[in-house]
Each structure stands twice: as C-alpha cells, then as structure tokens.
Length: 423
Ligand code: 0X9
Ligand code: ZN
Picture 1: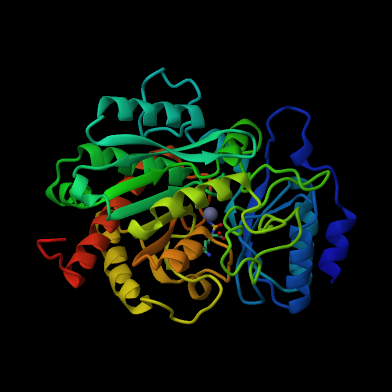
Picture 2: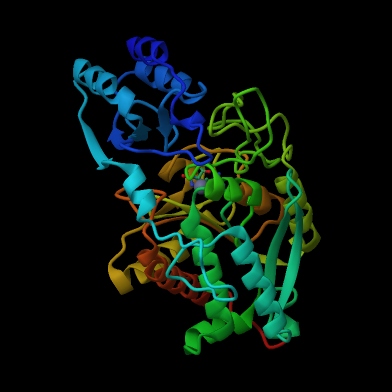
C-alpha cells in the first residue's frame, strides 16, 4: 500500500501535459521489475489508471510473479528506487533515456513525395498514399479497400492482393497497428504487402497466389496519427471519456468475452475496454467489414509489438479450445522457421498462458464468430531493449523473418489439409 500512497502523493502535471505540441520524454527511464506482494500489485493497478502520474506502464500488471515494464519520469525515479529498495526488489534498466531512442528511431517526416520505403517509419498519409499508388499501379492484383471510418472521421484503408479469382473464398486477413504506438506492425504489414506483390521467391509466390490477402496496415488511424503528432507512446483510440482521459483500448473492445478479464473499466487506464463493446467507431466499422467476408476467412493475423511471441486464442482462458493442438503444431514450426534467418527467438502459446489474460481482443472475436482455422497474434520485436521504439534499421529484418514464419504457417497448413483439385 505504501507504494500507492507515495506515488499518488507526488502526482503532478507530468510531461504528458507539456505546453509544446509534442510530448517529450527526456530522461524517462524504462524499468523492468517483478512486484512481490498482492498489495504492491494492487497499488500498481491503481497507479496505472490514475491520470498524469508520471508512470507509463508498457505491460499490464498481472500478478506477483509477472514482470512489469514501466517508464518513469525523472521526477519519480528516486521515489521508485526507494520503494523497490524498501521492498527488496531488484530492477533492470531497459532504456536509460527513451527520448533519445525516440529521436533516433528513424522517423523521416520529409520523405520525398511519392517515395516509400522500409528504411524509415511513415505517417498515415504516406502509408495511405502508398496504398493508393499500388492500387493504381497494379489494378490487376491490388484493390483499395475501405474498412470504415474512425471517431475523428478518418478512413480505415487497406488493400486486397488477389492473383487468382478462384481465391475469393480463401481469405487471409492481416490487421496491424490497432495499438497506436506499435509502429513496427504497420511497417511490417506494408512490407508484407510489397513482398506479396513483387517477391519472386518460389515459396513467397506460392503463398501470394494461394489466397486473397486483405491487409489493413493501420486499424486505429486516430491513435496512430496522435502517436505521430503529439505523443509517441499513445496506445488507445482518441474518444474523450473524461476531462483528462481519452481513448478506449481497441484490443479490449470487441464483443466476445468483453470485460471478463485483463481489461479495465477505468477510462484513464491503457486497457480501458470502453463503455460498451464496439463503442469505438473504428472497431465498429472494421467489425462490420470483417463480418461481410467472415465466412470466407481462412486466416486472421493480428500484428502487435513487443515481446517476440506467437499467440493463439483465446485471451480469457488457458483452456485449450477449438483447434489449439493444430495451431500449436503449426506455430512451433513457424517460430523455428522465423529464427532461421537472424536467430530471433519467439515463444508460442495460448494468450492467457503465454502473455496474460486479455479479453475483448479482435482476434478472439473473429475466431469465435467465424471459426477461422488459422488465427494468430504476433508480438513482434523486440524483447524490451527498445520496446515500442524499435529502430527503423530493424524494419526490413523484422519484415523478412515475419514473412518466413507466414510462409511456414501456410506450408504446414497445406500439408495438414491438402487441397483437392476442385477446391
Ligand atoms: O495486450 C494486448 O492487447 C496485446 N499485447 S500488447 O503489448 N501489444 O498490448 C496482447 C493481445 C492479446 N490478444 C487477444 N486477446 N486477442
Ligand atoms: Zn498491441
């Protein structure tokens, strides 16, 4: 309890309300530690849902044995260290000064008009410009998709990549950046789109030509824009829910097992489930879009970061439901194939067992609603040395190894379910 008292006593207008238009995180340090008592866990939960506390949690608080990654403002670090010392808890510094990482991340706002690459992170407008340009350059293969609109009136755009009309009933859906700050996910999604269009490798061609791919690189455009213009570490949507607090967690807002665990009813929390399922215009409209093609979904892939995990349904229970055994088998092979290129180590498993209980996620709703055979959530690089601020030099390697794992997933799936000629 002491933790809460001390921490809340020093609640101050932290950098979150800086007067400049962009929030700065100078000398904010990312720590990892394991809380030891139930009381401390509860204090951390309270602190997480308090506005403007100077503590930014990068991972939900799960329990006494679960590590917590927390970014702490310079004003609170002495207090934090004293509390840990008092409780005999060790901590690890993951990132000393996260503003330096943000400054060196490789966001190039002055990208030449018309050019798009994977050596830098891009804005929503640049991503949408590129989607439009590939749809007009490759009209035989690429169609622009309109997935609906957001609370602030932005379009949710994606593309369909189809090499063969016979694949219309075999859809692979890829969703990225439902969490605004996870920039590597839209970078990897656009990388994969590009590879599916143009890579000449036989296995990639086979994959591209065997399914219709529906890819939405930015599922939460309002949050994504906010993470570019104002606060690099923003996660949620941008609906205003109280004087200080904006946004619901769009990955806690879907109408399956909504708010049954690992989600908060506090609007200031980063895992706020929203006032009702599909309260967010972006989740409502994308759910309607998915519904329109739901019965043709063969796979649903959701891209997140960070932790290097390949997660399978569901987030509300550790029970092995639906085709758990098959997804584990395919997943184990996929992470082995992913590691081959650069040695990147992933773990695979059920969400609740491997990462934490989290309900109201998009994948869980889609899996349950349409019984989609292949359903995975990726937590991409890294393990926390950079966290959400993954340097842009890692976009291409992350894209390549992720593509390796996708090739593996569908190769395994085909071996287990050979297609007959008439299919
Ligand atoms: O908490 C989340 O939503 C995901 N982790 S993240 O660090 N990227 O925020 C885990 C997703 C669990 N997925 C589902 N319950 N479907
Ligand atoms: Zn996420």
